[in-house]
Each structure stands twice: as structure tokens, then as C-alpha cells.
Length: 269
Image (cartoon, rainbow, N blue to C red; front, side, top):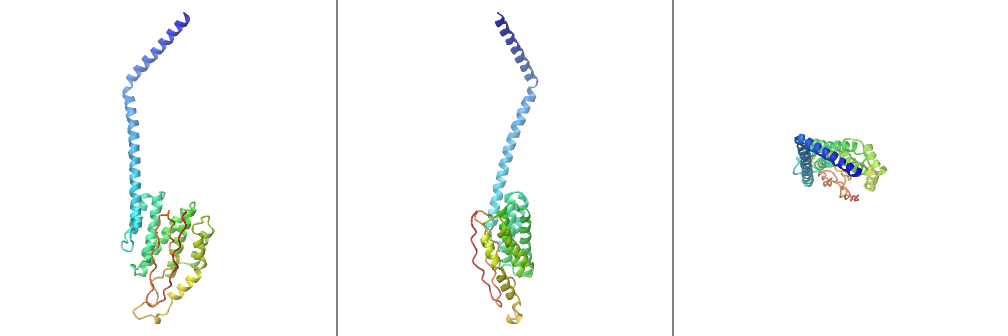
């Protein structure tokens, strides 16, 4: 009897609780429905934003690939386009950093192409590439492979500037030595070879660049417009984003052309 009464009491309490819950649900129905709608809207908005980001990233990658495949000698505007892509993506994004490095590579390629006849313009482009590589090096200390690649590109650019009377041979040696002493193995062999032959290359370039005007025809300048050292911005490993360097400029008719060694193939990381 007592058990039956206790059961009835529990049933009554549950009924009262359910009745109160129902009344509260009716009272706050609008709030409950509104909250559910807000949750659904947030989920849908998140999905849309994620899709938009992925679409924008795909478009940026496509643009990068098109810029990299372009011929900067025929389309000098590719340099500025790569810079705009880097600005849009930001320095903290992978595609932004790759686009900035590509901008430096394109500036170097154009400087070394036969399309640029003016020495001042050539130096301006080389300094643009130099500045870009130095800035990227400043934020790549924790990425040994990227830092080594940038140092090799910077060293090649500095060699070209040295031939034009800008920069220091000691700075070039230091860059190669930093690659040799660094933790990344990808460019050590090439850096060691370039450092070992640096004095010979610079000595030959200095002799060629200072030949007397009497040895040249009257219509030719006394010095070469620009000579390209054998260490060009290095060909990146196949997984890297950067482009291969261009063929060096031929020397003028009054000077001896120094043929650079064939480009080294970079190991794939």
C-alpha cells in the first residue's frame, strides 16, 4: 500500500514538472525559435565563408602559376602583378611569401635579359630583387630550407651588382658561407662550389669590365653594359615556387665573353 502511494506521488510530481516545463516552453517559444534560427544562420555563414576562402585561395594559386609561367622580358608588368598578389595575400600566408619571392626572381630575370639595355635600369631591377630577398630572409630564420634558397638568390644578385660596381665581395662570400654552415643540406654543395670559384670569377669579371676603350670600336662602350656571374639565382627544388634564372646576357663585341658553368640541379627536399 505504501509502495503504491509512493509511486502515485512520484507520478504526480513528474506530471507537475512536465506541465510547468510545457508552460515555460509556450511562454518562451519565440526565444527558443529565435535562438535556433541564429544557430542555423551562424553555421550557414561559416560554411559560406569557408567556401569563399577556399575559392579565393584557389584563384590566388592560379594567378601565381600564371605569373610564374609568364615571360617577364616580354611582359615586364609581371613584376608589379606579383607584388600585388603578395600584398593581397599578406606576408604571413604561404602564397603571399611565394609571390613576393617570385617578384624578386622576375626582377632579376628582367635585369639580366637582353630587353634591358640601360645600365641604370638594370641596376634598379637588381636592387629591387636584392631588397626583396633581404626582407624575406628577415622573416625566414625558422625555415632553414627557404633561408638557404634566399641566400643563394641574394648572393647571385649581389654578384651581378658587384660587376656593375655596387656592393662588396666579402658580403657575397659571407652569404655562401652561411649556406654552407647552415642546417639545410639542399644547397650546400652548390654554395661550396660557388664560394671556391668566387675569387676566380670576380677576378675575370674585373679584368673584362676594365678593358681600355682603345681595344673597342668607336661605337662600342669602353666597358660591358652588364656581365652575369656564374652564380645566378638558383633553380629551386622541384617543390619550390621560384622560377629558374634566365640565360646570361652576352658581352659586347669589344670584350671577351665569360661563359658561365651549366646550372646545377637542386636536390628535391
